[in-house]
Image (tube, rainbow, N blue to C red; front, side, top):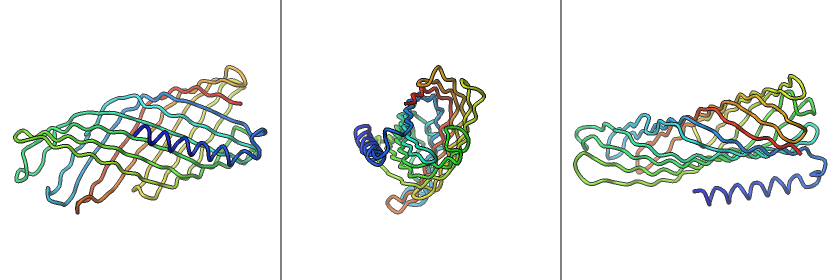
Length: 251
């Protein structure tokens, strides 16, 4: 997953650089890597098919580290943004299935999640504070490994990779208290291959100079992904919530 996602992200970064090459010298650039301590809630359900209805709530429900990096370039009222988030966790849960099918099982789940956002923004103020309106494309790659260990009988392993592509729209607001402190709010929703996603961010930043700043905040993201497998409807719900700390570099 990591190799494919990094390759795709590198291609998007290259396209972003090429698209802005005509005025790169005048653009304001921002590079911001983040460490994210996220609580993960991963629910999986299957309706229909040979096994009837199976639901695994809180299949992954734990704290784990995730990271992201954001690259932006802006000139006057217009700008481009590239954001990449990655997450890899594993956990175990007990699942109750219809007695006529198989006994209760232990489920070991591994989840690799990669999210790439590529978009643009419009800022009426023509400055780096105030309201920005966001529009772009979000790609979600989900790689799952499910190991079923029944009380009786052999274990079974299922691997599935899925890509979802959405269009997202939203806005963000940055308020400067003075030349050092600022606060940012962001909200966006997306639609397309997924059944809908919500992304909410609140943060506070402190500038140490013209180039370097620290940003501390909280992010909540929720994804509902529907798919059809062998005549069964599969629904995956993922919620990520937790604080993050980022370093912001402006050029």
